[in-house]
Image (cartoon, rainbow, N blue to C red):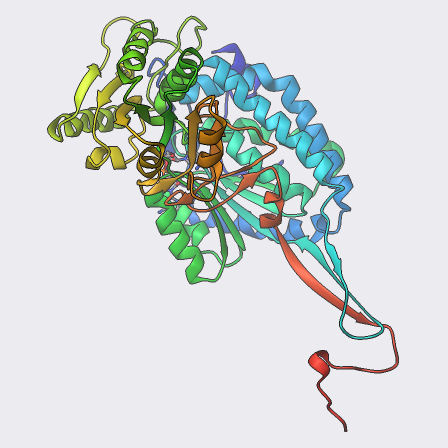
Length: 508
Ligand code: NAD
């Protein structure tokens, strides 16, 4: 038994459905969690059946009636304590993330740090859920708007950020007065059980009603129950564009609200005025970090033709130095893909790229032998392409980097924008005019646009999300909290007359 599993009290767990302190027994099938690191069976959870799902929704609705009445700063205090509990469990939870999902330990710990950061953000927010006041056109009237809790929030998350995405949603939703039902990815179910156990103790100490934090387990079917459930006014779903289109349609069909965080196809423009050494770090980390399985991973480099040869040589040299292996060993840069299906997708994309005319500057392949027994370790690779190739237009969730040339900045921006996705983008340049053009209304069309920073990773203070097929949702910082509340406009007449708006006369 790994010590971090013990520290997180995951030894004996095979119950998955929970309404907080209570773990519901379920007749659903068993979900096995295998580590992509070494193919070990880490643990099992029980998939939520319809009966368990109904019990969870009923509990979450009941809890909402009480929780919405708690003053927001008091809810914030509970979230502050969750942040403290996460600090205590950072090491163990970071290791679990790394072992269950396969990202490097540094990144696993970084993900837990993001959870701590969003807790801090949410605590401050709990005293800043501001409305506005407006001047009424009618004499003796006061008009303002206020924000009320929304209800039960459904959270559907992807495998690649198995804990942070839930915290971005739930910490904000909780200070806003909502209750949450979380369906984690079926590929990383133990991470959600670990989070629930951490939250449970804090909630018990504070007398938080049962049902404020709920988890359900399973795959697409359980997600579909949530999307179609009118008792869940908001579905926040993170995952592939395919999933988002289905969820978006189901939620719109019942006039619910969806917050969609979907696939990316992120590019960095390398200008002739770029600091090439600095750019190299951003490009390589962006492309190979988390083995290319971040929504913000760098998938395309658009390189000025005058620095193309120099920069591609630097890239090839850097790739030759990458060490691939156990992500819990800090000497390794790149860990495994999530499973062997992901390896198949990687190999298919390489094949498609070759058939479409791509030339590999750094070849890919699946690693075999000692340390690679899980069959999930692949070589990061680089292909020289043209932007119109169909494979370059799609997101393959693997470390495949497409590189291409440009001549003018207008052309580079058009290439960067001319894909269906719109999540993250960047330009590497020391030229102020270029940087400003890239950030202008005629520049990048993405939700995130950076200068002299790669595409990958984001701070919790900003609103996170993207345009077009990335789904349009915004999570985390800035005013993303408004997704989790309902706005109400209030007008109060403190006179003994009833003047109507727009000067309408209605005499009886
Ligand atoms: P996925 O779409 O296969 O699954 C994501 C989640 O959706 C899982 O919990 C799954 O069970 C559920 N699901 C699948 N089909 C569903 C349906 N029809 N209805 C309801 N729920 C359904 O994605 P994945 O492979 O886990 O994650 C990789 C994808 O997620 C990539 O495309 C990546 O870019 C994207 N992603 C986006 C962001 C972002 O913030 N934009 C963040 C992380 C991951």
